[in-house]
Length: 598
Image 1: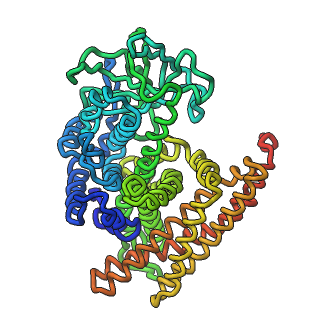
Image 2: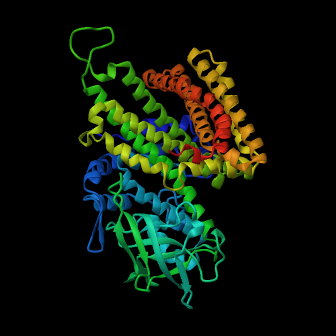
Image 3: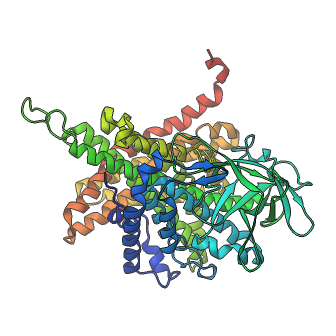
């Protein structure tokens, strides 16, 4: 199977679903133009398809290895990463004053989409560096920026997030890693971190670890966590590399998937000689962590989109080639490709619809991020920030849940061969599974949506968003095309159901927070289903206009058909989820798990 980055679909969703034109019109990016975006996407597609995609299956069979204290990546990764750096892909959206190209983060998010479709194991290392750079931009001293920033922006050095410990997973208040002041402005770091993605590798000369640790007099809980910058190799004042730091990978985890990504157990200070510097203020490490995490959560949502896209392309190619059975109503004659069977087409349509809806949500999230940071008008920045914060847990949680659905359907389309590793379908399912777990499990994303995002402003952002969906639905309902009017009716029903759930949760939270949180996961699913339908409907409206103007009717009709299929299958599901949010939450809050034990 030959993977092709879906450049045309990506551009369609950027322009006609996610609102990318708002960035072009904002004036915040003077160099931004349609021609430039086209050129970036085309070159990105060539790089992903020609350089990264061929590494995917090899990364699954021949993953990272720890040999004599050195982490070796999949053959070909080091050379591919050198081309990634040489092509300037790492610096795409970082500020020009930091050595970047100053383009919108939305284009970098599209790059994450393409890279993950090509090879998720390779792509994840690049996103960790992005998060680390954002934390350094946010909190580093001028001296730290001088030593580290330029080479991390270009990708010559990579970055990591060192948060998790054996006893401290989602609850970081249990962190035990220590930081002892040396007296010269540096700190002696000691402790162990687990699940550290690309904690060590052979692709770059240096790895810059951002490590959460506690100072000797730190208060208990999350209010006593600081962040430290700990390089693999010390950096001299002139920028050259010095001695090896006492920070080592002591084990690589054996995982269900993502075999090409080295997931390290990192030991800091086993010899008492691990030296780092404070990043930001003492006991304020969580602020820096959330800068990294917010960037990472959108990127993880894009991971889901990318791997779902690859699973869809593989399943489609197999369905068009595999002959089995005869067409409905035909009792004799040649067998037909399974693509001709209605249920297989239903699965393929489901895969494509969920992938495009996830892509649209994540791209819209990225556009909101860019507008929140760069829109010239303060009120527009404020509005965009509210959308960005609302969509972040949905991008991460809904898109990765749906990636699990899509990759599972991909196996199902292959039938028994999907369960055989030879076809490659199983790899996508195994790789996708982690995305719903790391960077905050999807249950945590749901609680963030209902707790911080919904209750934080009394539901104002959610209600505004639902109001926008309602307005879109009403416009579509008035369309002359029957299919657009049908999409509008489905969207209106979903928006009304989502509003009902939103109001119920806001009221329930005032009485019993646990009661409201028990309905958080179905609410996130309902919100994601509705948001996905909203963006696809917006695209369908644009597609109808393009058809009216005589542009490629086959392609644009497919976009309308996909939006209608989504509306009939997933907006209807959204309507039904209100009962799961309300009655389901009541049941979960009331039942004692002990009575369910054997």
